[in-house]
Length: 370
Ligand SMILES: *Cc1c(COP(=O)(O)O)cnc(C)c1O
Image 1 (spheres, protein in one colour):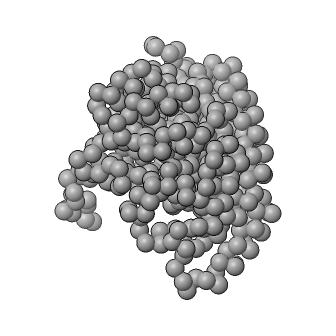
Image 2 (cartoon, rainbow, N blue to C red):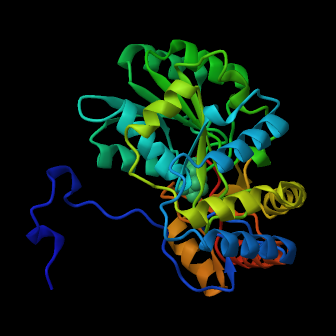
């Protein structure tokens, strides 16, 4: 077998591992923050009809501007965020990860830098590697919160071309206030990307409402992968000034968004009312799981997302295995003593809590700071 070492690989890719969560077939899957609910029948029918209609045009390339989808997304953002947004403010790609890659291709790249506040979504670092952007890691506090004074100072002193803030942040679920975001945007010499993958689960106003005030500096990335329960579609979007959207066109591949992706995403969006109901249920479950974990003696980071970072375990990797033994797949995000769980369906959460109780009673948890 030929190994990677035998290939003339770019120096910075040597000894790297591909991004991805370990996937094991378990009864309860809570490792990648997906929605626990498959699309309901009415939505399945709508997607089926859209795809069938779109299929008659498959001998042609898709609409390169995804005009209809971008209009629908602008309508959704205007309606739910109260931001004034038109199709010209929307960029679309295959998941918000591709959106972020486009942003780095246009505003980062060789000789440029991107700053993030760790622990955070590890794909940011990964994408800087692929785009030849220098990654500037700053640290969050021990409670995973972002200290705005420190963050502002780091931005002013190190002058990154791009600042990336996940809000709510993964893996903990904590948020920066809208005022905090604006403080950092004002301080930044370059652009600030706010990744709002989980915004629908948060009570906070979206940063899309600030884009008009900071047209050349602020952009907000979103996805259908989490609250919409449509991770399989691969649809992410950026809310930004029309000039930024124009910049994205310079780096995208021709016809990057397939006819089927555009059609399915439009069908999914038309059912956003139903999505909002699911989100309310998951928020109620988040509250319940937080309370029960706390009463079992775990510490739980306050979360505005559809997931919880909790601990402390003497050995997170060993605890992760014990959950797998009990049919529950969690995520070991590499934070000492902690694991992350998605909020699942009520039944899945019951199974997770039962496993947590059993594991808690057989392995002593560590007190914070010991
Ligand atoms: C899940 C997640 C995404 C979603 O990425 P897609 O490519 O849209 O599926 C983006 N950002 C963060 C922080 C996430 O956790």
